Amino acid sequence: MTDKKGRIGSSFDDYLKEEGTYEETNAVAVKRVLAWQLEQAMEEKRLSKNQMAKQMQTSRSQLDRILDPENDRIQLDTVIKAAKVLGHGLRIELV
Image (cartoon, rainbow, N blue to C red; front, side, top):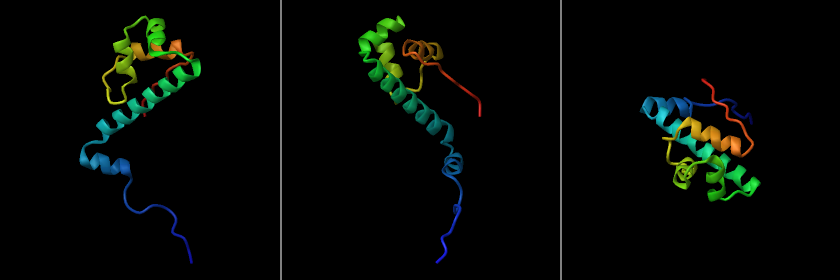
């Protein structure tokens, strides 16, 4: 019995593009990953949200917006501050 290799049909990305939802879906996915990564780094550094906001010199509500996986309307400079406080950099690239 021979296994079929490869895929059948189009990719999921192609499907989303056909449906007209690729950009929105991709933005939500990127934001969810970013929020998760920030929360993981905060846990590693044992920083509470209040401590994190204070070190970022921002409000707790602003930090909550960054950590909200559903909110994809955040400012780049705020994300850079968060990464810096956590000892990380931020890489953004065009693909």
